[in-house]
Length: 163
Length: 87
Image 1 (cartoon, each protein chain N blue to C red):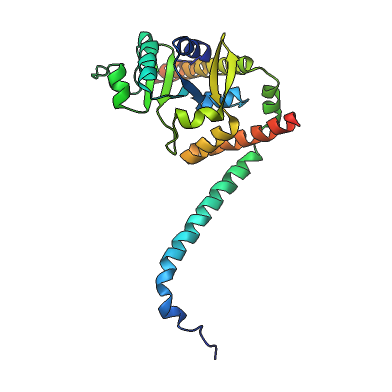
Image 2 (cartoon, rainbow over the protein chains, first blue to last red):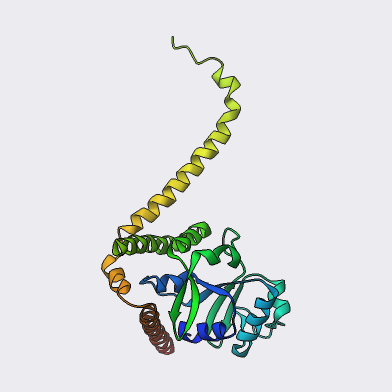
């Protein structure tokens, strides 16, 4: 299922969920030409935010991606508090929720490395390009090397544009 | 006859394994950096410059269209494989 940011982001913003868009979709907003199939979000682990996140996604029936059907999985505050990172399939497409990213950084650590984006009729936070590169490099995945190379080129091009 | 440095083999032999580990690690890090640097030369800058002219929303819409095309191609490929398997 093609994941559409315009469908996923507004319900979260309207529910006042604190999150930062990271990963491939953040790269797209920075100008990447690569195709990505899911949305990666770094969410705040405060109790209030977990409550808001649970309620905001519940109507879209989140379920563990690639897991066998009929597992005793329920999307609620207890599940989110008991876990950290979730790879989910939802009625809006695939969503990866991160309580922390490679290197152990959390929402609170990275919120100062994000900026406001106004799109799809709402305003939300997106990770800045330099930090996105740093996170991808920290993950150290071979599959990310081409993506990191593209992001570094984007950083060069963005700086040139600003001069 | 060449004179060996004072007691090097015996006194500092224990240093060699950790030194080797450090050198191997340094080499692997250097290789990773080089690998990314090599990929940078292959990136199509014209495509990125075009994307940078767009707004955030336009970039997301462009990506969605590309994604829908990929999914359509996947579906066609699947149908084709099913058809050829049925033959």
